Amino acid sequence: MNSTKGQGALEYLLIIGGAIVVAVIAVSIIVSLSQRNSQNATEKNQEFETFIDNTIIPPVVLTVDCNKAASQIEVTINKSPTPGVTRYCLVYNNGTPTGCRALAAGNILTYTQTIADYNKQSISISADKNGIAYSQPSMPSIDCIPHN
Image 1 (tube, one colour):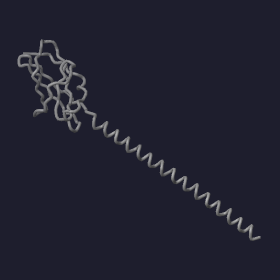
Image 2 (tube, one colour; image 1 turned 90 degrees about the horizontal axis):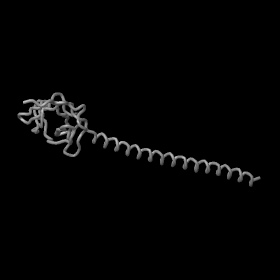
Image 3 (cartoon, helix red, strand yellow; image 1 turned 30 degrees about the vertical axis):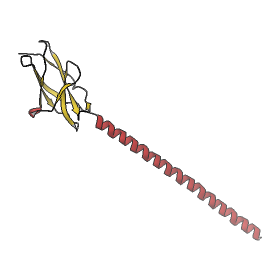
């Protein structure tokens, strides 16, 4: 009779031990998944912050005056809201950004540019962030008819 009592107690201990092993495995899986999800969330957050830091919003061009006699193009803009934008570059006839300069008082940019003829010129402005990256040119580009 004592041997059956011992067998019952042993079976009871084996069941409890098996339950503990299953619980340990389940907890380790949950901890592993939460760490992996935390790493993924951190990586995605860093990618998003990099994307936001590298996105440059172009300025809005309000007015353009093309003075052929003075070889000057005067552009009035609303500044780019992107932090770190220090200069604005002229995009003349859909070319590449040139003549980057800081914004003068009154949000006016003056560029010295040889204006070839009296045909309308396509003017837009690109924002320059710390000399490292440029925004897309402001859209739509403004047509300016040169005058004397």
